[in-house]
Image (cartoon, rainbow, N blue to C red; front, top):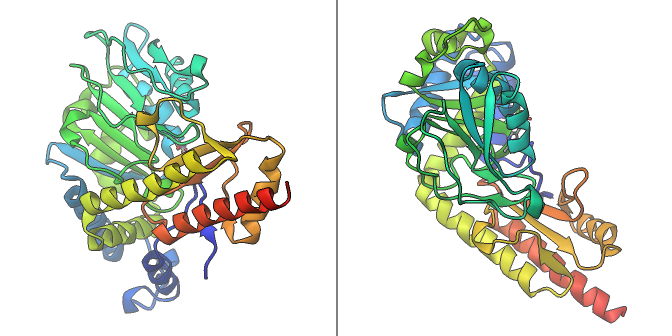
Amino acid sequence: MRIHNFSAGTAVLPDFVYNKTADANRDYNKTGLSLLETSHRSVVFADILTEAEALLRELKSIPQEYTVLFLADGASQHFAQIPLNLLNNDTEASYLDSGVWASKAINEARLDGKVNVVASGKDDEYRSIPTDFYIPEDNTHFHYTSNNTINGTTLLVVPKTSVPVICDMSTDILSSEIDVTKFGMIYASEQKNAGVAGVSIIIIRNDILDKVNRNIPNISNYAIPADNKPLYITSQVFAIYATSLNLKWLKSQGGVPAIEKRNIEKSGLLYKEIDRNSLFTGRVSNISQRSRMNVTFLPNNPEHEQEFLDFAAERKVVVIKQYADYGGFRASLYNALPIESAKTLIAVMQEYENHKKLNA
Ligand SMILES: *Cc1c(COP(=O)(O)O)cnc(C)c1O
């Protein structure tokens, strides 16, 4: 039995991806070349990219007026790049502060223009996401994080506004059905719920590509890769292949509607155990905003924290320690995490509770 990997990112992938990438590493599709030595300008890669884009468009029902890019970077790059493209000293953008990653995006945007933080969950230690706020209609864009990886909160409803909505979906892209047409731009690091590290997925409405009104570096201008497709910078051939495989796997599982059902079930089982178990408490204060992707919970007795981490690791349940300065636990239940892994974690929590009772 493999280890149950609850890492928030880089994260677990389907066996299908491990097996196919292992083959591609030795000899890609009988080309006689490893994919690691295959040029981003080759026909082989052009086909991989075409397939990855087609799968993503199909799985997310992306209309033609949106450009899809697989860029050689991570979501953090776009915290800086989005305001570079859309904001300047004379304009203002609205941002929702829902957690650590959202705050980073805000700090980067402040380097380029005025930032209107419409609301912040900081006073509640980001245990909930404020939903009552106003977005001025003359703003360049509204930015929010749909799933807060560290705090374990999620906003399933897209805030209504007439300005372009830009969303960091790094940890919930492809986890539930969404209407792409509600967004000006969606971006995500691949290594959480879509593939491996080193690539971000960008879905951007074409009219947003023309909004740059000052000199910015070519490498930061979305219009350049949109025109050249991936060729402005050497593409992450292997990582994009891994993503393409992951998308293919998702399609074979019934696509987004089917995986959403499973995600609801998987996270529901774990939340049920957290609420039942006398040793743990869920961290999120607004129950309706509990994330299906990153489940955060605390030990009722702080002394149990390391003990439970060790207890779980002995049973092959790993990487459930919460992010750096935050206490407690976080179990990430991305698409690729088998429901058996979630059930194993639940069984370990029950075993731990019994173990503490016996030793009380
Ligand atoms: C991990 C993460 C990021 C940062 O991703 P990098 O690939 O490290 O740049 C940004 N936003 C969210 C919501 C994340 O979970």
